[in-house]
Amino acid sequence: MDDTSPGALFDGRYRIVGRLGQGGMARVFLAQDESLHRQVAVKVLADRHSDDPHFIERFQREARAAARLNHPNIVQVYDQSQTAGMSYIVQEYVEGETLKDLIRRESPIDPRRAITIALQILAALRVAHQQGVIHRDVKPQNILVQPDGKIKVADFGIASAGDTEMTEAGSIVGTAQYLAPEQARGLPVGPPADLYAVGIVLYEMLSGRVPFEGEAAVTVAMRHVQEAPEALTDRNPLVPVALESVVMRALAKDPTQRYQSADQMGIELDRVRQGLPISDETSVIGAATIAMTRLASETLVAPPLPPREPPPTRGGNPNRKRLWILLLVLGVVLLAGVAGVYAFTRGDSAGGGGATTASTATTSALVEIPDLVGQTQADATATLEQLGLVVLITQQTSADAPEGEVIAMRPNSGGEVPTGTTIELQISAGPNLVTVPDVQGADGGDAIAQIEALGLLVSMVEDSSDSVAVGHVISQAPSGGVGVKTGSTVTLTISKGKQTGTVPNITKMDITNAQNTLIAAGLVLGSETQANDAAPVGQVISQDPAAGTILPQGGFVNVVVSKGPVSVSVPSVVNMTRSNAEAQITNAGLIANTQETAVADPAQDGIVVSQDPASGSSRPQGSTVTIVVGRYSGTT
Image (tube, rainbow, N blue to C red; front, side):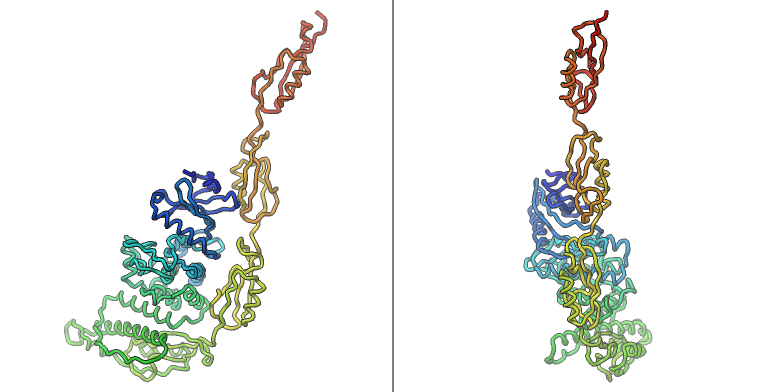
């Protein structure tokens, strides 16, 4: 089996640096790609699943699905393979932390920052959904936050093509706290399921908690199906009402009532960020969800309403009919709440006992709806609230009415309604808006020309990028597809290329210190070549490129490491002539140190009589061997 311990070469290519984490399906390691010289994350299928063909097939499907997706907000998948019975994928290594870590540390997160994060998640999902891929497991643990605040969505791990049913009988795939109701019920899912999960993530960022919790996964899943979430502003009153409406629409139980695309939800969020009006449908669905949530939390029970004949069918705009139906539902819910409270508080005076009847509830005072068209939103709201009526604000573009003026109301003025009834005020949002073009990835000059041609202004900032070419657009704000007023400013972030670092001097360091020094400089230790040298074993004796060289962040520095000097055997030179002995020692890579001594035997004149060290000894190449040569003087 391939070794995944630090320093091991996994599958002959990926040098393991260390473990990044472990999930239910896989272990994830930081590694150095020896072929392409870059850091990667290697995700290895957990041992307990290695013999399970179902898990292996799902794991391989993850790689195939994710590898088709290429976007700055998606973690890129590079490779997928098997080795020694282990399935694995290789993907982009992203520095930073998970969104879950950020939520635990900083929640509740500022609404503007939460919107910025959500827009990047939606940008990733837009690309996936356009290619028929549903993530199915959107959650903060799968969302990575880089040090510069940019977001990348990871683990399209239980994703599948949108036209292929992935849910098996009796099996719910995904994390329970973020499951859409249809997913919890094991039904086929589409983009609205992912957008429901984005709504949960937004809810958690803004309040610090998920809307549905429980000790068992099945309990949490059924709460998604059966219960309304607590109103977001009840948990965090600082959340803008418009933002709450967007989140609550995303959390609608019926998928058809949610946003149908990532673009649709993104446009609404961007309008909230800019202080622009959201759609009528979002206002009504969000408000109705909030109202039902709050009524569900009351201990009071409203008396039943008498049955009514359905209104006659009329022609007209189907979307407007749908809006009126939603408004009617909201009005009925709110009226029921008011009636219940009134019945409870008036029970004793309505007949002595504690019993409360429908006739008691219907004694609420009636008020006449004033004509407020043409008034400002503030004045109209104050008037209705003084009458005991509830105000619902929706906005609509208008070429005639100034921004902030009431242009219509429902129900119309002149009629009488009970106190507590909801009156919708339709407020002018000013003239029609210009749609911002999507210029992400385009040449900066072309992007500016395209935006300015629409009557918009451009502001530019520069930033480094490893993936976007110099002079091209890394990101834009507002994002493409968002409606803005003529003359609004679009901020473009233009790439100035990869970040760079200066190569430090790592010679004479041991290999561990050399590697740590390179990491601190944003660089990576490349190839290691060993050579004999007088330097201590393991010490860097040379580097390439040299110290002071400028490299892109993540660049490689190759080193030559000492493995110590070569050892040689000392030759036997006793009884040799001086010249022969010195030649033997030199040829062995050693240095001769010749000394003389007087001898009485003329036969020993010029002959080596001793040596140190002795023959056969092992010495480092270049060591000294001392020889003693006899010198006969002729005297006795």
